[in-house]
Image (cartoon, rainbow, N blue to C red; front, side, top):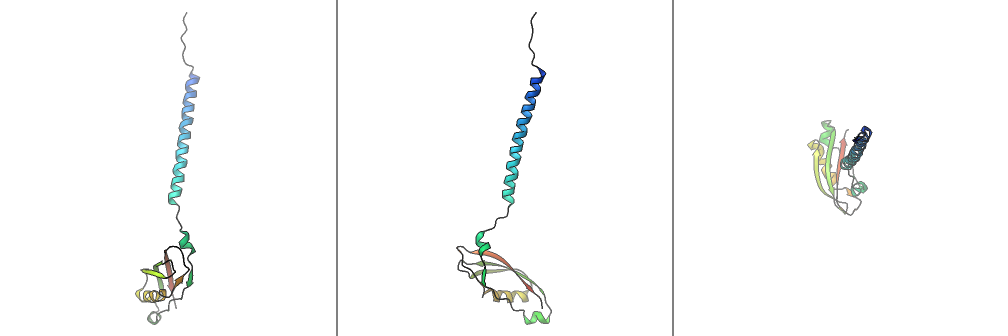
Length: 130
């Protein structure tokens, strides 16, 4: 009588379980790397040079007489480029009423920031109310 050897079902199940464990490990590692990559991409960058810039001289804009008569209130948003020596090198108005904008632009000519190693871009907001 000859006996044929058949693989035991238990070994096949163990093989499938170890394959499933391996696949789970690979997927978990891939998911962890993906989450880390997304977190790094979505994290906002803050530049230390821009955070460290503080205004040494920052006069308040004059509330224009015309705006007072018209009871004009509002916000003027301006983006400025500050040179390494602290002077405002460039000004770009983002929004606001034209009557109020001119007052802000005139005042910014007298602003001075602390010196830094590079130029900085800052966004400023001025609120006008009587």
